[in-house]
Image 1 (cartoon, rainbow, N blue to C red):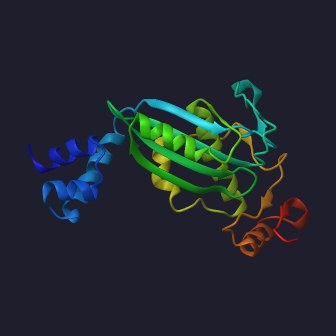
Image 2: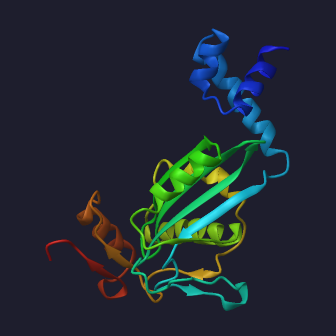
Image 3: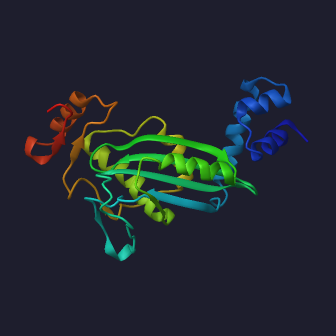
Length: 226
């Protein structure tokens, strides 16, 4: 078995590149290009099976959703107010999943944060899901298509307003799968950009960006202390 095959075997066990380097007693700089090459090989094959896909209750609040899709929000009045958490798990190997999570501002900023992909077993996934949705009134299982339309659609919407997704979004986006076409969801609060200041936001910068893109009467906002 050559080095690449040994790296592939350990990667399937959920080992990180650093763990693989330690196990094989080689430099991480030797392992990293092999991990990338293996990942590129995997992209040419069929997408791994979706094990689960979940969003918080209230995900549809203020959004326009194509009724033909049949996507139901089990608790639309739960008070999510444009903040949507999406969690996706795909098969990694027989007993582990690749898991990514996304924090979406569906009214303005798009993908504010992302986690993963992390390789978890069944018990770890259950614990992580409880933690991930811990601040919300509940969560529901949804089709992967809804997750794509929510996350990728919000990113497209935010880019139209002048905002790029969080730096951690690109690697986490792989678990969502391919994205083509336009979203079946109308973003913004009732179709209009609405910015609500978050704890880590540079609110002044956000407002400057909105004013460069839109007129003052074309968006609404709520700033803490105003």
